[in-house]
Picture 1 (cartoon, rainbow, N blue to C red):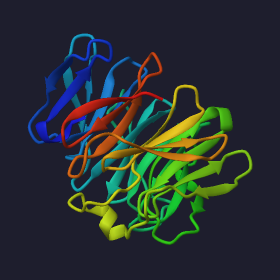
Picture 2: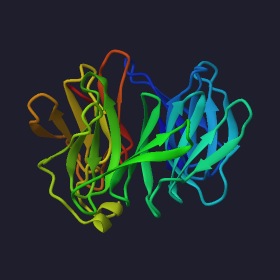
Picture 3: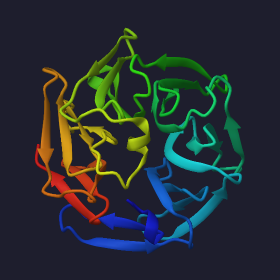
Picture 4: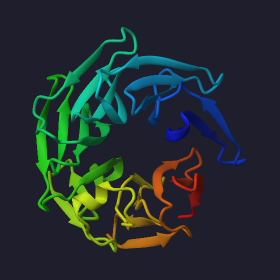
Length: 285
């Protein structure tokens, strides 16, 4: 995982609970990390830097630097290229790991969109556009965004998204409307589900200093019977994919603590990052 303010990559053993730390160059501000086909762990930084870590040796290699003013917020592999969602200025970038070539794509994107998260699905890249209030599909063959799925609630703030293969659907969070959404890739049907978390304004949702719950990161359970969402507060939310029941689970922490990233380990156990207390918690689902 990334430790942004410390400029480090952390390695957590889910069996022994031992954590080791790898130092990055100062002001990298690492944000996202993903495994590549080469077995390395590739990461980006809010500084626009891209690097990789060898999980066997712990060697860190800085690979590329995005143009000035770029603020990465997610990574995905597709067709041998590493794609980077640039929250600022609202573009998609690709890095060829062999040549080092960086390209940027904006065709089909609304202005000031704040692209946030993405997943590679069926040869396309699906992304969330926080400020444009939509999901967007990028076509790597045509180098453009060829589909927009606009959301019916104004300024709802689509944030993170995940893919559940058993339902061939994208599930995503709305961090201002505080709902969970589903987009069925087979039918094109869009459904929004209410949660116990109260809606807030988009401006409030953007501020980490406000004591507001807001649905942020989302991930499926290993059995794909549910998806879990963090609230950047003291709770996580479980959404049952069959019944659509929503359950809020208090984690024993309160603001300014925050439940943030989610991950499933090789044994199917679900873990949540409690960002501000700098802790890792297991969700027993």
